[in-house]
Every structure is written in structure tokens, then in C-alpha cells.
Length: 289
Image (cartoon, rainbow, N blue to C red; front, side, top):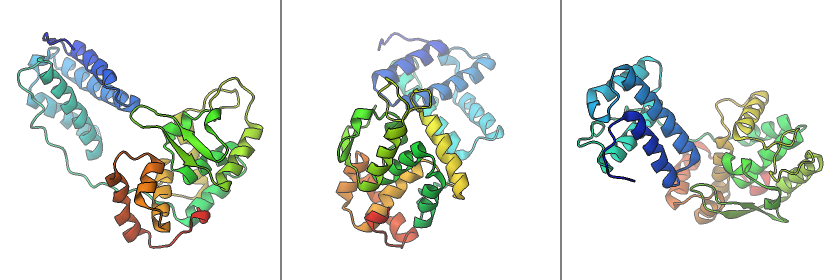
């Protein structure tokens, strides 16, 4: 990255995105940061400020105030503040500004909701709701039986399904790993593979026309079956949370669970302990999940 000052906001924005890409940041992160900073620069440009050096702290606070008036939640504002602070640290590091106007911007306080853990009744209801949809049933079983991330699931290839295990390829900041497949998920996958549309595309889950099933397609489908099953307040990621929580309650060691779900730090897995102890007192056997 060149150290010559670039004072134009649009130029700085483009260089910021290229920097994030060079750092191999997750695609979703780059996309989110890009949208946030684009929103900020549009606001500043409308104010007549097109040069980086023209922007002051009160301009940034004015942007955040407008977002608040427009109905953005404190959690959304906090995420945008993270984007702004990262952007301005980049500008300062690369000598595009001499003073950082974002340094003293404070995050709004908001309550972090704990992960949603499905009960035995709920995940059985979800299974029943989508049982006749062979592809979706296989997807749900993979989530519940392996704790896989939605992005990882969408990226699975046919060759990743092995005899008794699933290979999860490295993706962005996540390392590769293998996860054992039990009888329930193997049966669901075998049933899906029998009706999978014939296509040269190697992606495991495809549409009726043989195109890869995208993350948004998977999320929309699972959300629809949550509604059919009468499960409220749940999201796709909660199936991963459910996998972790129920394995903890069954006595699976933290180190094993952390490796299975691809957590980089054991402390991330440990956060579920209090949730299981306080919110989920029921005991669950592994074969029941």
C-alpha cells in the first residue's frame, strides 16, 4: 500500500476494500464493510465533503444520528461504528489523515441475546416439517449432526461426502477439518443423492436446474420450515448452536466439540457452558440428536 496521501473519499474507499481483500478477510466481512463505508461516503458527499481531510468527528456523529432516526438498532449502529473505526485506522496508518476523527466515537449499549438452542421437541418438529423435502431434510440433518456453518454447507462438493466422514474445505478464515457422519445424516444424504439432479456441477446441494444452492436459498428455505414447524425466534445459525449445546450436555469434551465445529479458540466453545447450565437443564443423549 502506497504511503502517498490520497485525500479523495472515493479513492480512499476503493483502497480500503483492496486492503481488506489483501488481508484475506472473509467475503461477508468485506461486503459488509464496503456497504457501510459506501453509505458513509454518500452521506458525507451530500454534505459537500468529498475530501478525507474535511471530515470531522461531528460529521461522523451526524451520520450515526441520521441512521438512528432512520430506525437502525443499536446493534446495527455498533456494527457500522466498527466499520468506520476500521476504515479510519486504515486511513491513519497509510498517512491519508493526520488525526483520526473516529477515535472517540462511542458504541451504543445494547443487550446481546444468547444463542437460541432448539429443544428436543423443536428440532423433532423441524425434522417432521421438512421430512418430505428430501434435499432440505438432508441439509437440516447436516446442520444438526455436524454443526457445520451455512457458508461451509453451501460450499460442499460431492467428493467431500466420504464413507463415514465429511470433509470441510478451508474457506476464507476457517481451517479445513473432517467431521464424523452418523447413521442419521448418512441416511439423509444417501436419500438426497438418489434424487439429486444430474449435473456436471460438483456442488453437493444444487437447484432443480443443477445450479449451486446459495446461502440465501438455504436460509430462506430453513426459515420457511421453521415457520411451518411453529418454531419462533430461530435462525439457521441456531442449528449450529443446538449441535454445540446438546453435545456439551451429553458430556462430549470441550476440546472435541471445538475441533468438530472449527472454533479457532477454545474460549469460544466455553461460552456455551453457562447457557447449557442455566437455560437447558435437560439431559440429551447423542443418538437422540
